[in-house]
Length: 106
Image 1 (tube, rainbow, N blue to C red):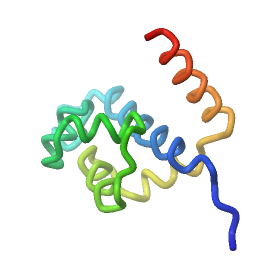
Image 2 (image 1 turned 90 degrees about the vertical axis):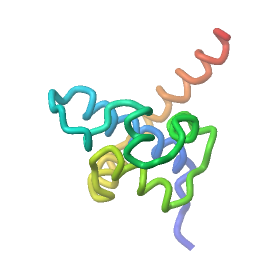
Image 3 (image 1 turned 30 degrees about the vertical axis):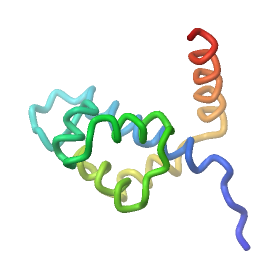
Image 4 (image 1 turned 60 degrees about the horizontal axis):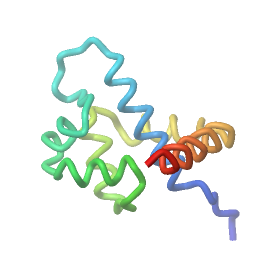
């Protein structure tokens, strides 16, 4: 059996956040390029709370839902995969630390 990446969930979250950041930094008025959870929700007909749960890791989306979110942002699964494969352990560590810090400030 192949080694299973223990960081699948975190890499998925970081990849989605990077795609969202690409849209936010774009100057396009194209609605297909959703730059907020609300716009992703409108494009996918998913509740904003569902989108938020996916982006924060409180939810483990099924493949169909993940693909719907990616397409709802105006990207393809290939775009997502290219970013996913570039996520480093260092980025994962930084993200984990930010979550810990955020939770300790509550």
